[in-house]
Length: 226
Image 1 (cartoon, helix red, strand yellow):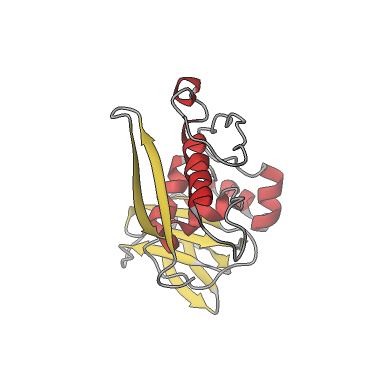
Image 2 (cartoon, helix red, strand yellow; image 1 turned 45 degrees about the vertical axis):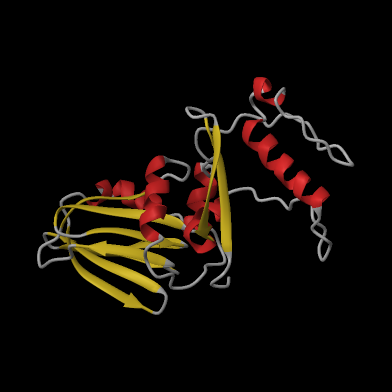
């Protein structure tokens, strides 16, 4: 991805009855693109000329995509192209992106999500170790005489705030994909340096504390070791 690799974002503002647009660095929205279905536009052809016809088709496709669920708006569309633009009505968008099936998610994340539940999401445990080894991030926890570690394998990005001498965990859990909380976490992680690109889909684990550290960790798998 080059420094000039911009993304053009447009949307329809119902309240003002206008189309709006902005330019963004594609890297800023790449986490959302990774989870979305992205198709090639039919025009222009690779290496082909971008003329008036191609511009009309691109504009028509954009407008149809944005207002395809509004039959009243379609009546206002009076563009013409040498070949018709497919007038198929765009289906309603889901309120959130579909999440992975529980069994598939457990298999991909390494099967240890149940261990978080079995330990009560480590509520009231003390987080006293934070270590990076290679591409893995490991935290150490204790509750009385009992100790355990959680390793986030192939960590791609992480955000760690307020790590202190005393860190009393409130909750450690996998954020459900397709939720507003997941999207908010992606936005925060986008400000963090990407350590590397994982081959497998990533997952986000959220660590919240009654006292001390709060963290978001994007990784490929988790391992809970007694």
